[in-house]
Length: 247
Image (tube, rainbow, N blue to C red; front, side, top):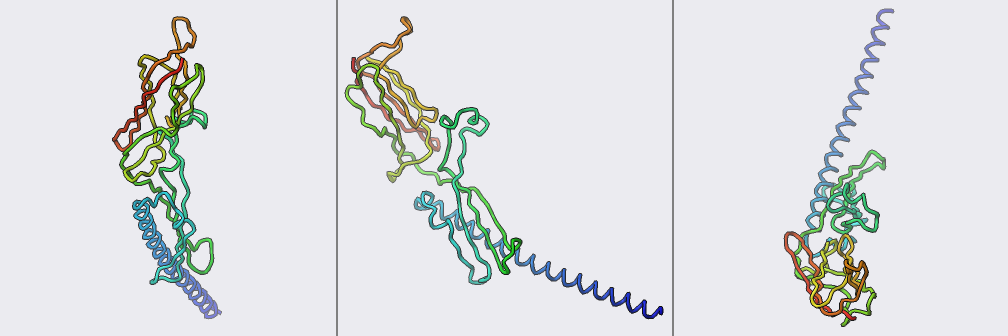
């Protein structure tokens, strides 16, 4: 009887050790696959970051979104990538969330959230590795600032409004997205009212001037200088437009 019990215990122990050994072996195999997948994901992410920094690629993510590939050394691993735009706030989220959506200073094209996913067989929710990073637009040189709309000469009649938008160009003549602008109006022989948006990407010019003495808006015909400025990467560019205001 004691011999049978001993045989049973030994058999149970052997089976338990075999199960543990197999579990350890499976774990080692999975760890190796995860390590391979992680290396492939990081390699692909480095390629994407490098790609996005050249030849205006950042403006077109078509070759990245939905792309799939495999490594010749690890053909069982499928590498896929996609991206999505990220809206950021300037100077910070805490400051800008106090304002309504239409008045917030936002950067909608300055960065993208990029994901690289590596999967391997068999198909299972655990058999994947995902790597994320935020890719910023490469810096360019601000070369020119100008107003989109033609400004009539003269601006008027009294009380009328003119809606203006502005843009900035790099050295290659491409528009630089997400710039902020500062507007000002320097009175000459005439004056007017200038109402810029918070981000400065648009402004309303009204052919009227406020008279604090009478607390009314009056016509102030004559000339004035409309100025708009953008600062990017520490470099500022200005555009001055001399305008005539109708009586």
